Image 1: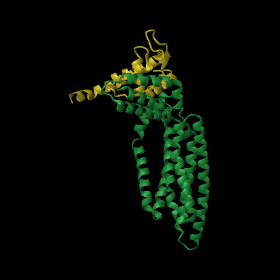
Image 2: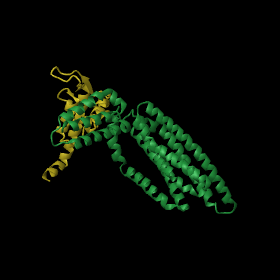
Image 3: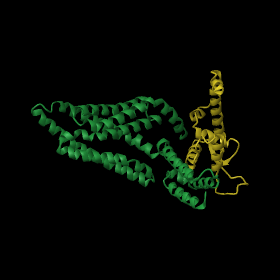
Image 4: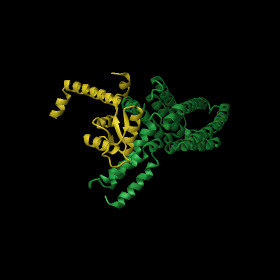
Length: 117
Length: 275
């Protein structure tokens, strides 16, 4: 793992879910918020300030970039964001990190005992 | 949601946006408003105006905390790390030493001619205290003006409790110059110093500006000030006035100590995103 990727980890929940939302294509702010809300059952609160604060920091960190609106977009005020190569690598590294932790939990039979309730 | 509520909440949010950090407003002001509009249009009947008010207020405070306290370029962070450490180390040290000296002399204050010496010493240090706190008030006023001119009203407002502490203390000191036995009433300043040291240590350590040793040193200065204060309370008779303050500060230190690793691990990743 490259050191600059390592420096970004672990990701905060907000950054992780924004990257995840952008992983399948460019989105504007409100769409990102809606996707994070639905994918986390509203567990990650994401108001306008929280979202754009995170977007600002993520652009500064080189994780995402602003991109042009798709031709189908009717509201020209909307700005779209997409993952760049570095952002995708960081997301993959974070998912690998989480996967390792899940494997450890499975080995310790934590998930099994949790599911049995 | 009917249109009347819609208009009212929209106006409220537009007003609230003026208090968002300027850097965020400059870059994304229109996007913030647009996102709010879309949320209003997307509201279903189960989420009423009260929920919307709650949602935007919660977001407002979360944003302020993130942008001002946790962000690398936040002015409040710059204040505490660049100036706060120096100011509070000096005043913490001064406070601890002067109080210690006062106690040593205080032990002899009832012994004949020593009593007069004690009185002269106490009153002379009071005038020095007044001068120093007055200079500190001017310095903080200068910082407040700097923040206001930079558009950081919120940071300037944060300085108000410090002003309050300074002027309460000056007021108490002026009273003390007439009656030296009022000395314990100036302990409120210890609270400001402890909080200052705490914030300085936390911000500096979390941003990797200083190592763990410096952080521990900052904590020790705060604790020394506190311990000297406790000794002072038991030597002079106005105990109850200070008990609540001592419990409050001690609880803060204990909570910080117990949660140190948890706080560190939860804040550091967020700070890392600011890089």
